[in-house]
Length: 322
Image (cartoon, rainbow, N blue to C red; front, top):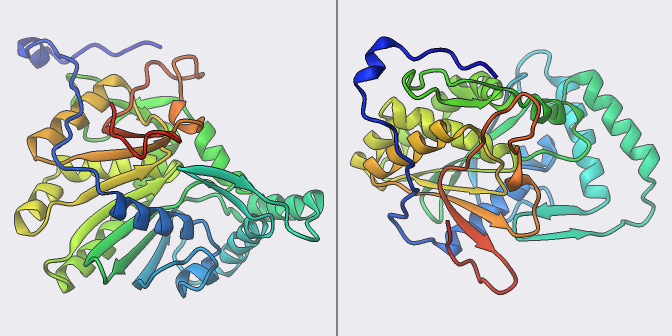
């Protein structure tokens, strides 16, 4: 990969140093468990998720708004898209596939015919574009949270896998030209398609609910989108402003892949530390996703995690480790 030359003004900068993620607040296991439930619910079909009635929708939430890169529920022309989305989710529910951070359990449901249902779901997914990413914006009243949860990849979601495999690196929009911050192209593009509507939905709720805490979370590909959102909202001053106005935002993701190169990760860790914030990454020791992309990934160069890792093993009980 050819790296473009640095601008002349960068010559006066001191040499870059590796930045270690800093844990500036304790890991809250109770909050993490609640967010695990919300992230699991985000894998449900649209119908169940909008009314918070799906099998994984635990606890009370309010004001659920679903946003995708394709369209938003209620908009003209979205019916086929959401029908396809529900078809994909039906496959996930039918075979009781539960793959989530802390454990991996697969139970075959009675009457499950893998070839038939999987083929139908993947066909609908490819035909109707159910591969766009999804953000669920909602209110968790018991904890006084305003949450954005980015959905993880569902196994039958062909379009989402295409986004995941679009793993060449590209320059970060708004990044520091002197350090060549580069990120995953597919996830970067997906976030750019969501960013304005996510901001509008969150700002509306936060204005209506002063004193509520902003929570940014996501699972798998959703963790990558949450990381890109955190980086952008740090850079434009949104998160520091919210920290000064009320409680510091809670930033916690599950089973996240590496999002960008070392320059991106170091810049994000430094910005978090400057503003007294901690990004927690919950990782299951048996999960492959947090180990990718790796340096041998086509189109990639170096890849590095940002944030403080919460490493889950049968013995760890959720011990924090970098």
